[in-house]
Every structure is written in C-alpha cells, then in structure tokens.
Length: 366
Ligand SMILES: Cc1ncc(COP(=O)(O)O)c(C=O)c1O
Image 1 (tube, rainbow, N blue to C red):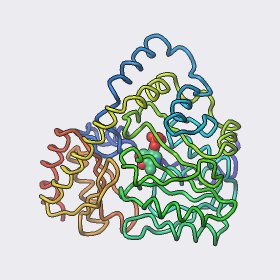
Image 2 (cartoon, protein in one colour):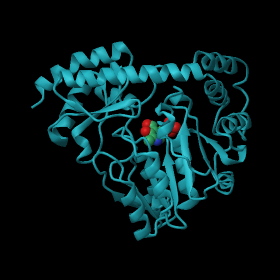
Image 3 (cartoon, rainbow, N blue to C red):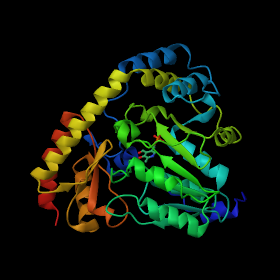
Image 4 (tube, rainbow, N blue to C red):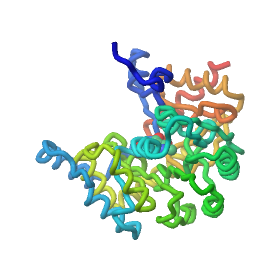
C-alpha cells in the first residue's frame, strides 16, 4: 500500500477554486456568460496572438527556454532593474507555491487576511504551515494589523494583494511604503500585484527592489489577457530570486506563453485599450447594480463587488440563481465580504445578458 506523508494524510483534497468547466459538467449545461474568473474577455494583443500562432506552428516541439531570458530582460528593461531580480513562473499561482516552498515548513506561521485570495492558503497548507487570519477593515486588507500579527506570531510570511481580490479595493502607496518599514526582521511580505496593470502610477508603491523583505508578484493573466497561457513573474532581491532556481519547475513555462508574454509586454497600445474597455465595462456593471437598487464597492481591478444588501445567505442565493440562469459569477467566502457577488468585466453582450438576468433573479430570490 502507498504510504503518504503524515502531512498529506492530514489534508483534504480541496481545490482553491472550482472551475467553471467543473460547474458546467455538474450542472449539465454551459454558461452563457463567463463573468466569474477575473480573466480578460478582451483577450491578448493581436500581435501576441500572431506570434503565438507562429510558435505553435513551428516551435512547439521544443521545450521553452528554462532561463526565460528574453522575457526577463524585457521586464527588467521596463522596470529599470536587472534580470537577476526577476523570476518567471507558471502564473502567480505557481510562484506563490515556490515562495511558500522556500520559506514554509511544518509549524511555520504565515499571516493573511480572512477571505483573501485562497490559492496562497492552499500552498501554505500543502507545506505544513500555520495560517493566521486578520479580518478586513471596511472591505480593505488591514495592513497595520497584518504586520502587528506577523510581529506577535513571529511569522515568516505576510500575504496581501494590492489591489485586492475579492473586493477590488486598494491600500495607498504611502501606507504600503510605511508598513514595509515595520515588517519584522525575518519576515517577507508577499505582495500580490495581479491587478497592478489597471492602476495609474500614483497607486503603485515605490519599493527598493533589493529590499530582502518584499517580493512582488505580477501576471500576464489579467490586463494582458493570457490567463490560459499560465505565465507571470515575481521580482525582488537577487538573493531571494536566486533561491527559486533551487526548486522551480525549470521547464514549466512553455514557448507559446514565453512568446505571447514578450510580445504582449511590448504592445502598449493594446494594454491602454484594454484598460479603457475595463473602465467602461466597470461603469456598466455599476449602472446595472444601481438600476437594480444595489450598491457597488469602488474597484481598482477588472471586476466589481456588487453588494446585494442583505448579508451572506441572501448573496449566496443570488449567486446560485444567477448560475442557474447560466451567468458564471463568484462571491467572497467570508462575512461580511460575502454580502457581495463578484462580477468580472465582460463584453457588451455579456453585460447585456447579466443586465437581463439580474432583475429576474432578484425577483425570484427571497
Ligand atoms: C490576487 C490574485 N493573485 C493571483 C491570481 C492568479 O494569477 P495567475 O493567473 O498569474 O496565476 C489571481 C487571479 O484571479 C488573483 O486574483
């Protein structure tokens, strides 16, 4: 009989997010509109698509460059940094796993917000770490309390996302820059910036890239429209980045993704267009909410948390009824955030369908 480790035997086989495809299989129908996974319905740059098609036709038989050199150099140039400060991985999700593997073992304490992005927690549990949760304050991650908790518990990692998922809120650059100075000596801030590309510069904190206590994570899944290609990067102090080479999946990033990301990074016009379309679509979601006497949380991302106004049980029923009506949306997992449903931006036709279904669902939900 296979003998698993005690840690593996202690874990339940959970998935951080049940995929829409899994839901479709169990529901027995396909969603009409996909507004639940914070992907970019607007897709990647046309230039990136063409470049990826070419690689698919001629080069996909080759493994990707294990050093991801061209992409690291392009990112480094854009950030005025060195390639040695950058590691590429199979999306932020994988990179979070690598950081946890580098720093967490049985009993190590890690701080995150209650209801924050769950994939991080999944990795921590998988390496035997102990999660300590800090509640949100006014729908924002509470940075002061996260750092206080890290100090109190002698934690190794603090995780927070800025802007945040699932609420779409933000903490100011000044606040982030300030709390970084208070992070205890052997603790690392894991700063997830998946949605950073939707921000204007004033909202992006200025942090010394060689600060050994901060590691920042970015992705091509959101504004760049490459979620399915699975590619993202982390940047920080050389020493920390170097350690990723000891454990990362060196051939995990494929050639199509490497090429797509490289070309997408250079297509600034497409990025600007996407940002504009996201802004318009968020306005549309806000209008749909208002038309139905619901309020929204101000969003700095590509999704909007719509407050259904009557607590978690009610919002859960709204979500379930939207799903029955073939609208794929998600919602936060804990109180009081779970009074909201989370609606990702869509094309005009997606939001028109949502606008049609929401009043019907509100009427039929008690
Ligand atoms: C806060 C946050 N981090 C990371 C991710 C996943 O990023 P990636 O696709 O690069 O793994 C998401 C996706 O929803 C997210 O919301």
